[in-house]
Image 1 (spheres, rainbow, N blue to C red):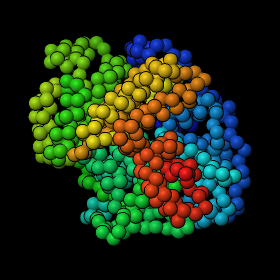
Image 2: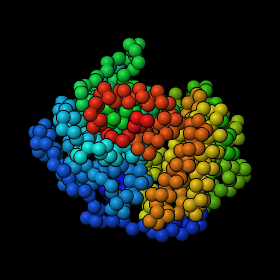
Image 3: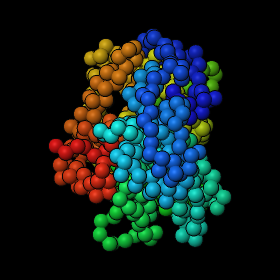
Image 4: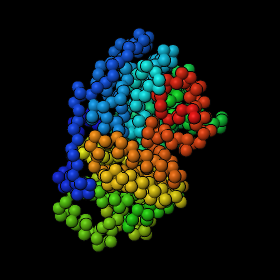
Length: 536
């Protein structure tokens, strides 16, 4: 991954002239942002590590050069990218340690506990909530424990489970599984770089979660190396032996120890994948169709409903024009859906299952007055499903703030949540003198509710970007809490959502997490400053 942004340095999501013009019409002209050169980024001087760490993993698996430290010095949140591009990093690991086995992980943690060295587990570095920030928690030394060498994959085809190393990136895991004819079906937007360990540590939800399930629902067994020992849960489909310790580890964000192995349910590679799009009259009616399908147990594997703003801006940023765009506009105008909400549906599986579920969804979409757009827009969404982070880099270059946040609630209160959060973001941007665009889509649907994923764009306050972001983020999070939604559906807690954990789980819940932390990590070296608030 490139050090200053997202993904492959050779890849760009270029915005055409039409899209740039549309952006400037909406938000006003922005001041293009400069980007520091690698050699201009200031890193604190690295502290030396005990020789025992080098002995534990070998000298070639301890990296102390400047670029390797920089690559593990931040995740990929908007504040991370602003700091990286501006050469204003607040910290970096003193070294990057790459263990090759679970035993080496255990040994490194024992040494760090004895020596008082903070440890930040590192997978793909894709956190957008400060989950891998090198916060030292009062320790003078800190290492980034990169799990990229733990990449084993073993498939139990009869049980339809797979045991996977935490360092496997999404594409690597899928390639290993495909050799046995199976898939996880877990495809978050971060898929290209995020890892199996990261999926488990953050309770990740992929874009096909309505069909395949969130990652935490796929996990059947987990192994954790903690500073004081190891935890391994049984590989069984279910157990009634007390509270699930697996659930304690899943979502722990590296604060209890290091995930060294994950067993998960897999499915046969689908015989057919079919994606298509519709235009609903509005966001509410599109959401009602999704609710009815969820409560009938007939959801598409992928389903998302964009509100009118996201629909309009997505079409504008696509840069589409010419006869085909004119024909599509004429068709939607004729159907009374020119200002509607885009619905994307995707079905995966055997042909009979796809046909049956698609037929039911089609009947309900037609009954709700949605206009069919065919397979081409659905395929376009599938091709571009991982392009968002690349697009954000381009917007930052042009001088625009581009940020996302997500939440979830029950169907009965989803409309209230949508209105309150959207209004809070809009008002916060206006108060900063940078009125913006606020967009949202509904996804990750359940019988009792769904996730809302907000995206907002505005002219960046040059030189004041972090304060601008913080004001808007705080307003949005306060609105989520006020509406009774969750502070995060699938991005995790990290540092950014830490102030809201007491409201999310209550004081007793915080104390329970703190008790687990004290038992697994009594020295407090594991990923300081994340997930668990300090004692009040």
